[in-house]
Amino acid sequence: MLKFYTYYDYHNENLENFAFNALLQEKNSNTIGYYHLPENSLGLTERLKGIDKNFEKIAVIGIGGSSLGTKAVYRLLKDNYNSVKEIVFLENTDPIELKNHFSKIDKNKTLFLVISKSGTTIETISIFKAAIDYFKLDLGKDNIIVITDSDSSLEKFAHKFSIDVFNIPENVGGRFSVFSAVGIVPLYLAGFDVEKILKGAASFLDSFFSKKEWHLIQKAAFLYEKSRFYRMNVVFSYSSLLDEFNKWYVQLWGESLGKINKKGQRVGLTPIGLLGSIDQHSFLQLLIEGPRDKTVTFIKVRNFENSLKIPNISLPYLETTDFVNGYTFNELINAQCDATKESVIRSGIDVDEIVLEKLNEENVGMLLVYYELLTSAVGALFEINTYNQPGVELGKKILKTKFNS
Image 1 (tube, rainbow, N blue to C red):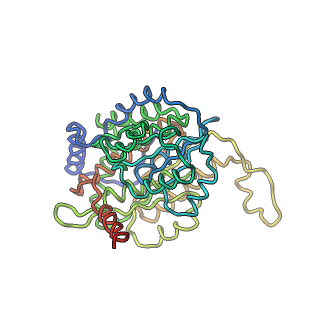
Image 2 (spheres, rainbow, N blue to C red):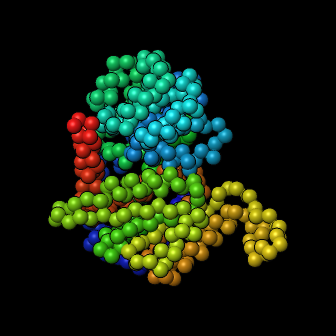
Image 3 (cartoon, one colour):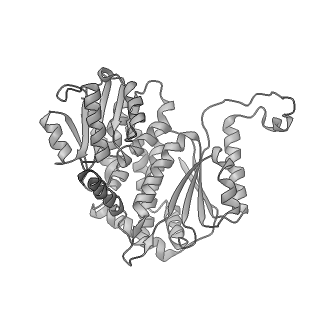
């Protein structure tokens, strides 16, 4: 279960109805496919049951939307399992990091997943080529699976070498694809209960479109209405396990909302992902006494299901820290979250909060789809195409000129 709290008073019926109806139209018209993924992707598990699982590690070769969502779920849930397979993410073209990853991979015990929606992502295909060369991969025999758009160049390549292919629905963008084969294939093969993740997401979608999650629409309207003043949206996540979720949110938010709208205006809300309690010591000062151009969302886990305690030890000269002795670290990090939140609210900053009762599959599915829906709602109010990325495409075109001149 997720619980939501808002520490500001805002309501605009016109904006809220406009945003909700825009999302409902997208869903019903089937132009935007992520709304249907939690239900449709349940069928993937039947096909995945037939995949040979004679491997100990999964190497995901993909970048951005092809890796960030999977990485977020993996980080959030892997400690809940005793025997999930390790997933290594080969995503950056940093040569030192790549060689370090390669050196720790046993090709004979690894499944290579090559993920690219377009099929021609330069980082992904270049890393795949490097893996072929480094490991002397036999394309017809070694453990390789491709995840890509139907009829892409990468799919044609896979068919040539009889490599298994899973397709991404055409109407699903990369950064909204975590509940498609992009996320479900690696997570299922690693040993995660993907059905619970999908059912969590599906239940939140059903609740949202039954108008039982109106707080999300109110938040979207608030962010849109205040965007002239609050140009940054801070997610302050109180668990190190949420670090990869923060990165996924940054891509989802930044690539979806930073656009030129129908009126020719540049719009967007800069996403900032912070970790508590770490970033209390680096960013909190700026939040409280710096420019009032940010809203803050606190995310915390109520029950970490871990009883690690702060020992009842009193150290010479350090007695002022003894007030937390005997408490659990679960209690400490949540008290830090509450204290930081209260200090931000007292400073006049607009705040809302998401509370995960615990880190389980259903709650993670809900959290991810909550942010997908929120992104779509804010995009609808900005009157932009939330699902394209022309700025990114320009960079890709320029890259080609660097090697063709």
